[in-house]
Length: 368
Image 1 (cartoon, rainbow, N blue to C red):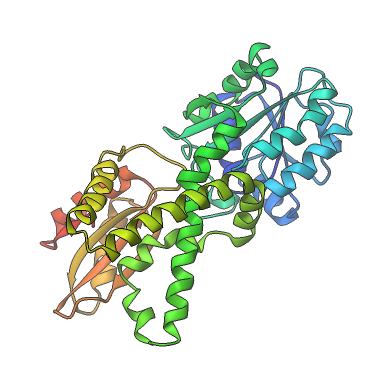
Image 2 (cartoon, rainbow, N blue to C red; image 1 turned 120 degrees about the vertical axis):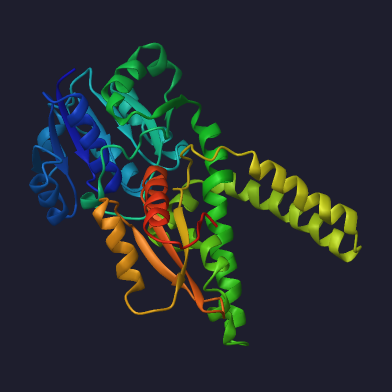
């Protein structure tokens, strides 16, 4: 399959899609466009795209595939721009936004003009951002959700789009835009709200007790990691998925009242059941499947406190060409051993690192 692709938005997601397209369809031409010209130039320098443009209109009219890889608020604006262009009649337009209902509604302008729009959401990401962090295998084994209208699905347009994106090696799923936003709200959007709320609660207590920030350096910091996500992006997502999230707030309030009543009644048996049922469901969740929130591939290493220990560990990994995405010493223990937390890009890298460290040292390693 070959043709011309216009990729609007050259961040981590857009860049990774471009790499997957180039690998699967090497004869195709990929034109990149980004409001950040330096980011666009970097994408061209890294040969992620073949050429760049500063205006959408310049190449939109001759493109076979247009991918909008921008924040959801910007995506709406871009759709309006495309609706004013004289596009090829058989062009397929898609996006990668984390919300779908408002975007699909906005895309009716394209459909009314006879063009094809299929909403998309690749459920994969990284703790790094920008086109320099793009990886051809970012979406491998991840869920890639499509929300086509009935007309686009029956017109074989969805099959064409899947063929274009075959190189992502993602697991394609089709559902309605409303169903997508409900599911994404439960397993991605609402958890980000909860994480941010927990951080705000800790910040308030910090004013009363300065120990809060020190004690939060361990597990609390880990379970609230997603609160460090891009605030502008999450502002837009919450406003886009407002209806579903308001419904989830009602359910959450009922759930919290339920737990509160168990504590008030000191109902030991039901409190145990509450946590046990949650444990059973959580433990049964797939462990090697990519979901809506990027996985954290962490390896913990018990290390003695002596000069050069960190460089020693990283040196072993460097010899095996194992890349580390993050490294931190957890200082919550009082004995001579500390805990070194190493974060990796993939499960495979973590497994290789564990084997490497165990081979080179007698340090205990575990997954937490």
